[in-house]
Image 1 (spheres, one colour):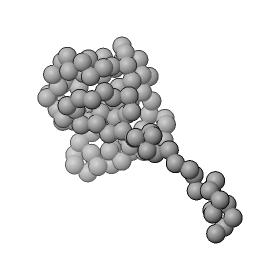
Image 2 (cartoon, rainbow, N blue to C red; image 1 turned 90 degrees about the vertical axis):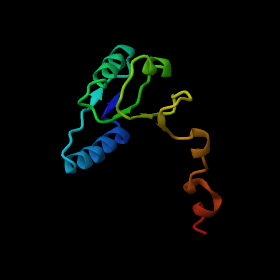
Image 3 (cartoon, rainbow, N blue to C red; image 1 turned 90 degrees about the horizontal axis):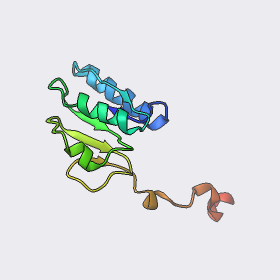
Image 4 (cartoon, one colour; image 1 turned 45 degrees about the vertical axis):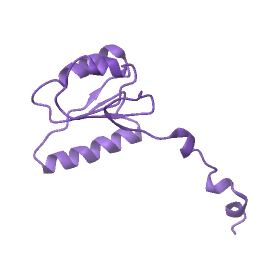
Length: 114
């Protein structure tokens, strides 16, 4: 798993859950913290080309899809994040526009208790 940071709750919880499932299957989760820098993301990309890697979960901040396609990775890849361009990779992200709504606490009916 390659992520800019593992401290934020999203990445921390994701890593925890993946590690639990990996352990049950006799696998190990490798976590690479990139800081979102191009240099470190390129290094991570190279490591994931190893035949010992069964799958990749990667949240690139500085690499483009072309950067990721430049070197073949035989393992399945899932990209995380909203900065991902359209590609052939499996991609998980949040639709930031659709996810913006009026919080329940600020609506008139919930504020008045109705």
